[in-house]
Picture 1 (cartoon, rainbow, N blue to C red):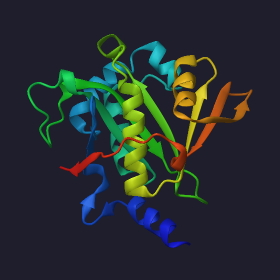
Picture 2 (cartoon, one colour):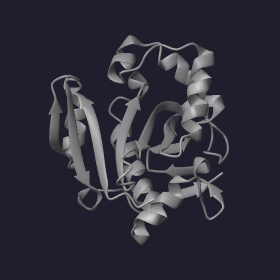
Picture 3 (cartoon, rainbow, N blue to C red):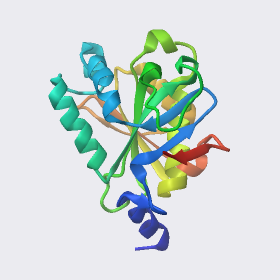
Picture 4 (cartoon, rainbow, N blue to C red):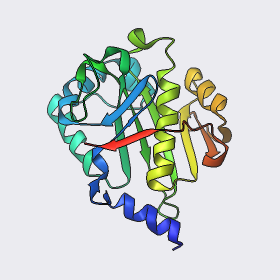
Length: 212
């Protein structure tokens, strides 16, 4: 294994410099990405009662207890990193490190390092659940760019992949706008796979990254 891949594997294992990878946060111009905490689960559960979101995320409806179980599994999964997306304009007062700021939750963004032959390839997903409160703010695009910049810095990711339903034209348009190219199509799942090398993407920099 090359040195860069070894470093990425070490980060995936859970800690970097003694800081748990589940404690990182990142701040952009309009969005703040914070760890997915237990305090976020009830609101997240409310979102996932929406049939449209269930369809868009290919998810099944869960009870609140099941949602807490899923949260725990996500938190412990060494090959996944999840952030809750906060809208800065909805934060009561100033952003406080360690405060879950549930009042400002608008969605989540995830990366999966699920290719055992290449831990520096990450699948990325974005969900903006609070469309009415966020329309026209560009939060989805900024959250994606922040997450990718974070993933490059902390995991050494060199390639990003997005798998999007062919009916989700808004997401397809967004990822293509960012520079992702169509790589394949699944007729079975009616899904488009898009790839982009990290070096070709307009990543947000400088980026404020810290830990709780």
